[in-house]
Image 1 (cartoon, each protein chain N blue to C red):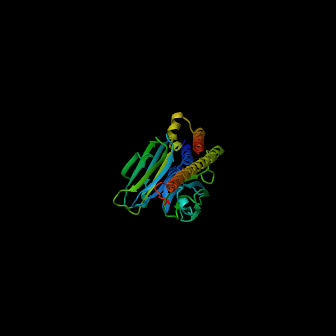
Image 2 (image 1 turned 90 degrees about the vertical axis):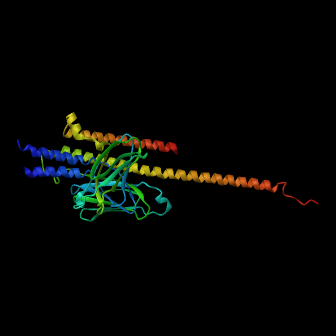
Image 3 (image 1 turned 30 degrees about the vertical axis):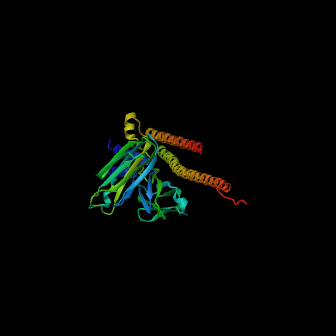
Length: 168
Length: 213
């Protein structure tokens, strides 16, 4: 029974690690990631420094998120862990920039970035509790939401095509 | 009484593993020389799929650009996947082992380019990966396979969206060039016409004296 328990915990922890990408932020300069997002889309992002590569020094990073019109949506300094969330007001390119702002820079910082958009931001645990669904029904509900998101994406691409051919 | 608790925890872990597949990021990074993105693959044999598109279009106009190289390195340091000289491509491979995989985009040309990338790690449970349990029934396996199919549709949509953005950029640039060349052509035409009119009027001008005998 203890082995099964350890295996379950290991699987749960492993699944958490599968939800993010790692960026190497240089010791001087800025590392930016961006994405084209439509309007009225929820964005939820977690970031943290991976301390495994810095066992003796503790660098901190600064984070800044800007909207396509230049508004600052999130700005924090001297942080090792953080989270930001916003709903996009305008469609365009949203940029998140990271840079090292502590005195001890070491040889660069590895940042874990978990960038979730749209349906990926849904809190399925809360939904499951609220609507009292579980098991296969919950999984099928997730599939339904994913199919609806695909449908919305197709409509969006179709509208872009219409605008395209009209302008030509 | 105590026998169902590990099974319940296994079910929770199974749901967590399944829900891990629903992560979608089509982020963009600026590649000047080499940019690396790391992605964690939990299990050996998982299917790693994705795509990347070079969103910038200007770089391919001015010179014979060789394109972007993609190299995927396994946790042990071996190269498991390589793409050379691409402006956009899909990729898919099976992970030989679990761990942190490194996706490196290399830009042989010096000018910075924006690369939109999407990486997905898909996992379908089977009796080789998970401990055997009565909850691992064909319904869960079929649901996971359906999720992977939907995930491939989502990846295809992200790929098309990135290519559409790049195509739009290219067409906007082409339209601006056509407008610029057309206006320049109009200006040259009007200048030539004005010069012709002035020249002919000068030929018949009264200011030019003729010797009259």
